[in-house]
Image (cartoon, rainbow, N blue to C red; front, top):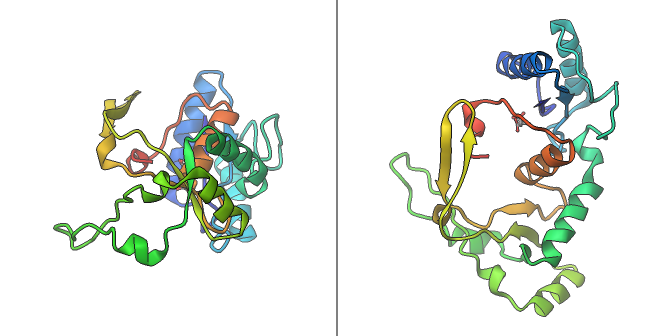
Length: 216
Ligand code: GLU
C-alpha cells in the first residue's frame, strides 16, 4: 500500500482519508505502508508543505513503514531524487521502440485540438506524427539538442482494462487514448510515468485512491 501526496499545500481532509484507508488495509493484512512524496512539480512543491504532511500524518497516528525519515529498501521516497531511475526505464522503452521523441511545437499541438465539447472545453488528441519519423533522423535531432518530449507508443486497437476491487471490471477504449507524454521537455517525468515506475519498483500490490484517479 502507498500514500503518495504532492507537497503543494496542506494535508487536506481528502488526502488524510485516502491515507487512512491505505494504512488500515496495510495494517489489517500485515502489509507494508509506504509514504511516497510526489514532488515532480518543482514550481509548486515546497519544503514547508512536505513538513506539514509528515507532521499531519504523525498527528493522525498514521505511521509509515517506508518513506521519508524512516527509510526503507525501495528508496529514495521523494520523486525528485529518483530521476535516474525514471531515465533508465525511459531508455529501455526508447531502445525497444515502445516510446519515441516528439518535436512538435505548441502551435503544432494547438492545430490538433478537437472541437469544443458541450462544456466549451477543447481537448487535444495527439495524431502520432513523430512516431513515424525515421529513427536515425529523430536520434540526430535529439543529439543536436532540439527540444522534445518523449511519448509512449500506445496500441491503437482494443481496450486497456483491469479488475478493480471496488468497482469491478474497468476499461478504456484504446482508440480514444493518444500517445501520451512520459518525459517533459525540461527532462522531468510526467506524473503518469513516475507513478507507474514507482509503484512497480516499490512493489506496491494494492492502491486505494479517489475516483478522480481512475483514468490515471
Ligand atoms: N500525488 C497525487 C496527488 O497528490 C496522488 C497520486 C496517486 O494516488 O496516484 O494527487
